[in-house]
Length: 375
Image 1 (cartoon, helix red, strand yellow):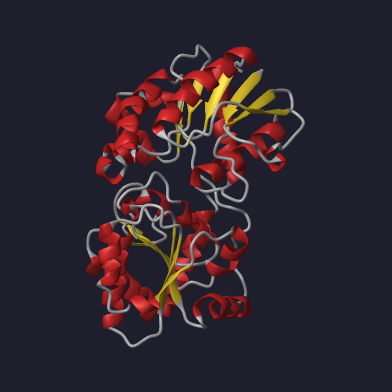
Image 2 (cartoon, one colour):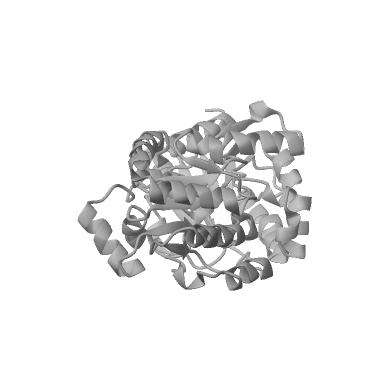
């Protein structure tokens, strides 16, 4: 079989959420199925590190698709033409976008449809593109893969898709993340937080990540204690809004916030296990990979009691109301002031993390693809 794949998010040294999903699943699927030919469709010059095996042919087509107008041109013209020329039996799109005009059987991975719930958090043109095209993508698909039961139910309810046509394919977490020694934890705190303990957030600084309330909660936590705890923020300020900026400016303890920017896994494998807790209190997630990354590292997790996060945490995290800085601050205090209770969280988290692996993710995605191929 000839399988074409949208690999436009495989960017050298710039892998993020969906890019990592694409990397980890395709690396395994292509090597496990040498009997099939894979065509990786790139929208810019590609790195050879993404050509995982001999049964992959990389193809650069069209212009870089990083704008709604270019999304349309790339998927409806460049991809559509390439699928026809290649004679592809299947088109897999790990970021959910499809070509509507192609007769090629297609399966998108729709990670979430947050834009249906909080459209105001996106630029106007992007918002209009998503809201117009993603319902069409969902109905065009032969099958859909998504990353949580929550997202599956959301797609069913919003787009009227038959639930039997959607497969849940949980994310995994990078195998590089694991527990480290107390000596390594101390060294990491010295290197990244001037020797102090710290709460940690990892992710794009989008409004839905709730950074503003995290700042407010940290200020409340610090106001009621005399500790030297810091708050480390890892992620690019791509969507830094006026609300986030104002919340930060109003902080009494803003000097205790550490902005680390984009950070590679080789550093994160020390930063995460050295943290007091992962504070991942989003308003909305399709999965929430940092929850699992922290659990694999033996780091307690504070996360939201809404969206998919209770499902992913599976009873192995402290849940809070993301709309309430007081609620978030209370969980911070629980972690900082009750170290004995943290041992149970660590144990439960390590057990929960075993449910999620990229090997399982790749296997389940392949099973979904087999259903479309009729294998």
